[in-house]
Image 1: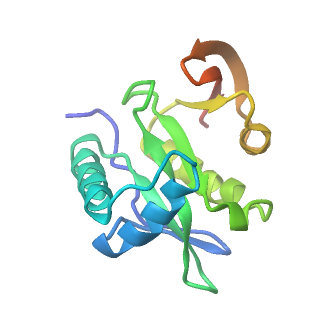
Image 2: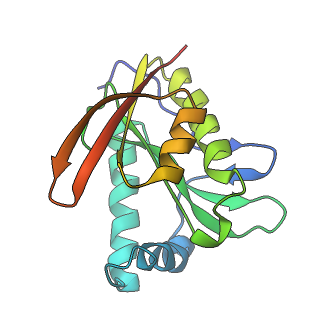
Image 3: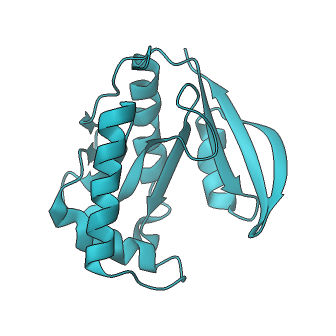
Length: 167
């Protein structure tokens, strides 16, 4: 049992809705993952991934949430909290959006809502890890008040570790 409140799993902003995963999100998540250029998973694999995320959420009280635009109603990515390279006490914020919606402020808008949700759990600090080559993601984190803590080298290159204190 965690000493933290459960994160809200339905978040709304001016332009976005973040909500729990549904099996119908599998095709969109599969397409998003394929943009990484590392191959395309089967729909069954992605459905299993969604089921694992839902199970982890039930255990941890934190979640990655699908992002859909209010006006268009389309799935554009995800944003939320994960254990990742850190801990349940100080989780990582994570987000990934389709390339076609980059540059419109959606990642920043979604991540701000997730920061508020994280603060509502009683946590006092979050982490983010991102490849040092990923300038747009580093820019989003800077807008959100994250500061660089250190850089490590992993098999895919340098990873910046950033942290932010929550109010």
